Length: 158
Image (cartoon, rainbow, N blue to C red):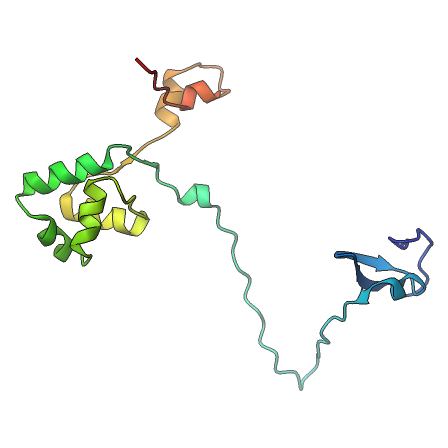
């Protein structure tokens, strides 16, 4: 192993230091140029009472996504609420939210997060999510390679 500061071969255990904000493994001579990082000592053996730490699972956010929020979510909520014959206040009470939240959603001043979106979908029996990618890609090129044009919805100005 070589010193990351001077390049000399490190004999023995390298020192881990912070130099100008960078964490480096250095030789004993170059260790004085930075602040040494001391690792917490771990104890092992029968007297150790350190609980084994649990691994956190990596969760890919894209696997959790069900689709994309429909750009006309406000109209869908408003029309479904009127069709059900309930007021904004009644819908708000039903999903345990404030009436102001429903008003802002219907005016498109507030975009519902996933939790609120699911409450609205359940209460109004509608879907506020549109599928993206797959069906549009299948209608596109059959080569298997997707392009932005296969997935994107292009809106043209008139």
